[in-house]
Length: 244
Ligand code: GLU
Image (cartoon, rainbow, N blue to C red; front, side, top):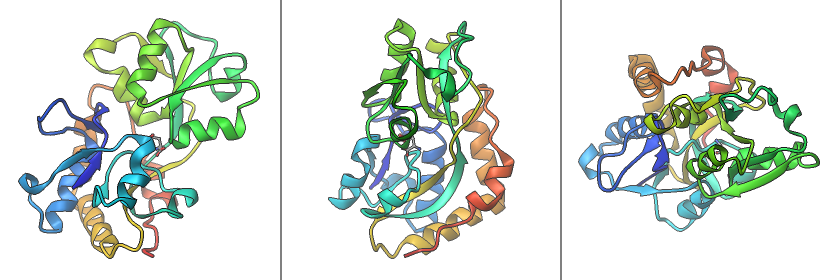
């Protein structure tokens, strides 16, 4: 049972009972296969940002691949293998907006993010005084608010924003600002104390070495204009967490 997002094109995306698509799901399939679980034996479970710790604590899922940043606060409740990707928090604005160039230009603006995400937390911690934060259950809802003018910007990781902006329905409407202000290390969420951590880390290392990782990343971001940071994804931030 693998927890993923269902509404983040290019990362975790699923309509009905169809096979999910996206980079998170490709890494999940690769890792599961190395653990002896074929694709047809995987049960996919939707895990929105605010439900991830609960889903692991309650035993609803065995692993989570859902743009899930490794943080100390989350480590109090869950374990992490990985990271398998490093992204950065950014802003999505309407295509004709030139007033917002980074988090410092958000004063007096309405900003949408998702409940339970590091993205919303960052705004509360550092930019709360000037910004009106609106929280939703998923980023696609935030994008709807952005289009209708109810908010002026959406904030989360650059790779998520790029995928949302590039869907057929959203073509040409929005732009990613391109001024990241955090480091988000995507871990594989596992129940606290789980003994699967090393095995998952070995599988991720193998996926990177084999070229499958790069191939999956390119295929899932094609046409979005997104270019991942090679520096972040080969440097210190990409090093595996010690398994507890
Ligand atoms: N990576 C961030 C987080 O784990 C934002 C993306 C998300 O909400 O999944 O909170």
